[in-house]
View: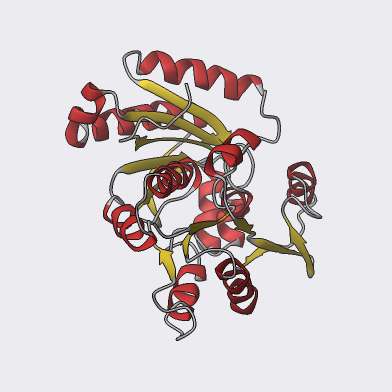
Length: 300
């Protein structure tokens, strides 16, 4: 059996418990450029500091890892392992996949490094990491795991309500006129994440309406497309957010409302969105979604 290294990035907010289960050989960080300085989450950038930068209106952008850095990681891993499975941020949200995928075809990596475009983010990508670890431990090859995860790219949904258009404007997701009008009318956009891309789905006029809409959208998705998974218990619900205070009363109240809205379904977790997503949403966004846990891996 080949020795397979699981290489991941930080496109899902991973706890110590997650990392203990996933056992990544290495985590390749998504970095930030903040007022022309380079920051790396978990190294010289904490979550608390990131929110302070947001509040100060600092100029923040994300920066994908250099391909030479990634190649060096592959070379080091291949000294110890036979092959590398690299599961990373959705291709529609970053150019990292396209660059890494092309590099994996270099002669020295061909047939040894497999770059997975499973088109997931946040908790949905965390579940992909969990599944990859399970399949590696059960003897599957990196190539087969890559193919399986990519085939499952439609097995999740995320809807996100954004409390301000300011950061979507800064990142270029909406233009200045839309942002100005939306701010004046107190419009709250709802974004849909599907197959690795962000889409503007609908608009409401308050966060209260947005929360109701999120529940309605998720219920419709489950009833229309995932009724069997809801019945067999493999569907896992989740909340993602960009609150600076993870114990904020507003967030806790929504969590309680959310759970009551789906009393017969399994709940996964409430977690902060990855910082690279918060760059676009700004603070106080709330998202809901689900994943399919086909191997019953999520710790209860």
